[in-house]
Image (cartoon, rainbow, N blue to C red; front, side, top):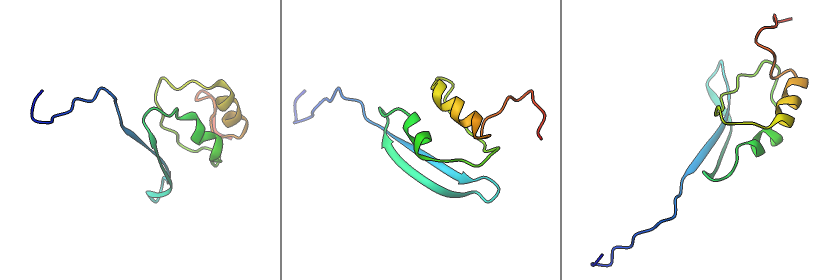
Length: 83
């Protein structure tokens, strides 16, 4: 191309990871990362209260994280009754 136009092949993007107080709608933690960084790192750093609501990509698979969150009472079998 002429005119000094540069064509870039790299892809870029940002992800916004947010922890909110659900009933108030107030962000408690907001972190920006590159789109290429895997999501599981944030869950290692954040400790969520029991019965937290998580929204994540269906492609997210980290069995060790799921196990830890289940043991902490954050995740539970949806077929179980609440205590």
